[in-house]
Image 1: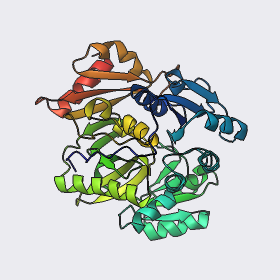
Image 2: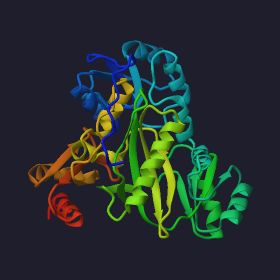
Image 3: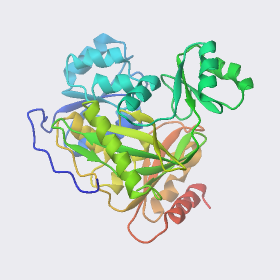
Length: 386
């Protein structure tokens, strides 16, 4: 899928420049969608419950209200021409309320699948796509039965909510069962068989209102403390056959969900060369931040284009790219990153740096023979002040 997709024509759904895109959620993802939309000549209106949202700093308007506030939601819908969201945990009732008034892209079907890990994995298997083995866990007895079926080690996760390692417990021995179940705090859960993998990769893809599809290069993702640390595009060491398979799975998910918007799918690569779907995100994704400088069209511009009814842009890469997250006090490296060769730092406008908090990222696009690992180490040294 390395050829540029054939451009789709403008349709009646295309909103003209000057229209307003509503974005549910005011974090860094919404911020970068708003910036991309503004570059195309569109206004953005942010809606969310958090005070001083980072996205609100770059948007034309922001409404601070609970997602359950139907009066505020109705006024928000009246002020915009189309709506998207920056994270998948928006209440389904909120999306349904807004969808009755304005186009919401992606739609409710994708959100329903992505919000529940059990539904998500069942959906993937129904498409003939492999995942880790899993079982639903609603009671302590369910957990015993799931462990008997899947064996140990295994990972117990809440079916809803949770990201960056939150809402999950690794179970190594039967002595861990009580504590792991207690960590779920009564929430419906899913037990996943432990997967021995050699790499974690992801694919970000988009589909427009006219059915046009654009798929980015697969990337390798490396984590620290359950938080994404580095993304490398294209994924080094991933065979052309597996890269195409990952892109094809992303394409097929878009079609099966009748999806409009940006979708990310995370995979495990096993030692025997299999791809297992880990999870999907019906939105722009941290592992796609490299596309701002590293691709012809960024994931954020694709998200804006899709939501506004516009044709998608070209997803082809401009070289090899590395993206390093700036976590917590890493943000203090900003002055040094401004002077680093080839570095493109992005800060998210968050007022307080805390341990584990994503404060920004830095990307470097390699168009020469510089080894990827050396480039990553160079960025780390700049961040560390070495």
